Image (cartoon, rainbow, N blue to C red; front, side, top):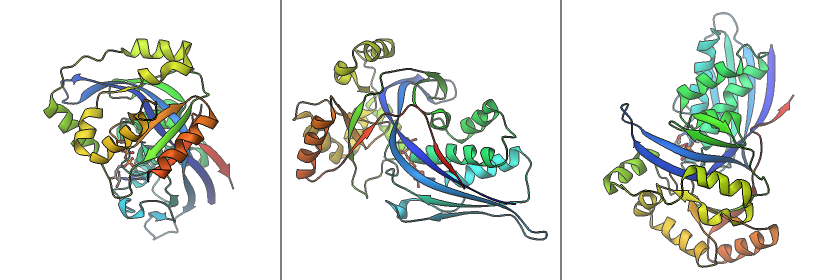
Length: 306
Ligand code: ATP
């Protein structure tokens, strides 16, 4: 057996992120609105049966792509961990997997690139092997891999509660056009550091916009929602990175409302139409930022079977 599948795995933005008090497990609960966007990593999966007397292997090759030096190719890679978990779950001990990974999503950018790759791996293996696991079983594996992974598997637009892994699909307007400012290649923020800083700043502040209000506003006034974008972690992210402050000021000074995605440092805003998005991009590029325009998507992976 030798089977090949090509999968495009998308990035996400958090349009709203409210960090709640810590639970008994020591983790903060969150309320968030996830939105998948048309920015994709590309993964090619090749599955073969290991020959007798050969130990099966999981190999990850990085093809050209951004921030290659920040992506491990050993068992620290979430693709490796997802494959290992999947093989253990289906009790397969004779399969070789080679994954060629081309990164376009900024690493440690708050765009869930690694989580998306992990979800894509579970999806690809289950697809190639004829779906031995049902969707709820794959979602269980997603939860074991990380709190953003279940969303990455389902994609589109979703409300996330709990640790972000309790999901409800939202059918929000999809004409969103995002202008996204990518962090410099050497700027990495670890979610753990951001949450620690958030705790130190000890924000007992209450958000002015509740998740219910945010969703209601999105459903009814898609063009005016910019001012309701919200992220509790933003202050912590800004205190860890001068660049984030600079990028936000550059956007805000042009009459837009900027927001950090997830635990940062990527910064984005919503543009009312393509022409204005392009205009804003040009201005920001002139100021030395790396900027891209992306749209909301309503599903997760794009797949090409070979
Ligand atoms: P999140 O928004 O879920 O916090 P992120 O976008 O901030 O995610 P990622 O790019 O998913 O962060 O990855 C962060 C860390 O995970 C980095 O330290 C990176 O080395 C490691 N990593 C492991 N596997 C991958 C992968 N397949 N792609 C990118 N990073 C990976």
